[in-house]
Length: 355
Picture 1 (cartoon, one colour):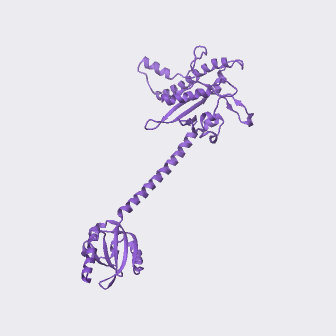
Picture 2 (cartoon, one colour; picture 1 turned 30 degrees about the horizontal axis):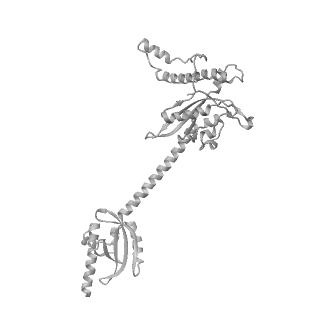
Picture 3 (cartoon, one colour; picture 1 turned 180 degrees about the vertical axis):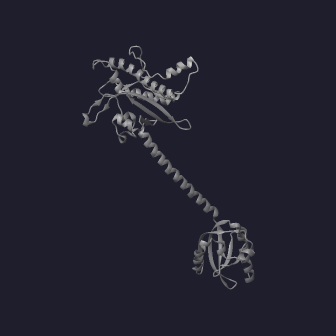
């Protein structure tokens, strides 16, 4: 192949290469030649290119670094790195450059091969933004979770949150810990029935058996379940004499569902009704336990439920405080709402089951 034919082949390769390529003066940075891919990619005509320098397609703040990078090139091929450049109309592109020093028309020049990596950079930026948003959402969720934990633990009621599969204790309110004389670190993460067992001194004690049956009903029936008042003593601290402290409780278990309807948690709520038992208890011999539970607890059950009803009525009364009854029937209803009396109780007129 003759030198002229070789020059023609090189020119053909230059003009038709799929990546943008241009040649610029190493001193003035002026464009000396560009290929068709460069014209197509940046949107300038050949005449416009040849009237500009490579500094004209960079941001002004990048020009000092560009001059330094180009001025330090020796003989050979160099990786120029990724630079943002601007095409016609101000469109920004990210270009990965490879530079080679050459002689062009008796002038020291640099041949620049430019590969468009704009989409790669944009995807990386989108990824970083997505990760930043995810991190922000995660931090926000952690803050909300922490705030919710503080809120739950500070509730005035006595609550446990249980896992539905094995009744693992997931959370406990401060009021529950105080009432049961337990510590959060000692019970959270453990099975409810490993933490609380029936009184070994009372062979026929069935509080925890009733509790398990109630939790199973919540799982199968998918609704709240109220248990009859239960006798369940709690351990007294050693510095207070040790042993067991007599307690009576009014328990309720309720399901918590996910958006898809699956059972997420079971909320266990108890009310310590020991004071009501002591207030209402008959004078029965201590060894006559069956009579004690058979008479006092049914009365207590109605009393507890009546007090709950009373609270509900008082809430209704607040809502209808300014209500004016248009007729006698409505007047009777309004009068009923204003009543705060508890029902009189006769322990021998009803029975109660553990369900």
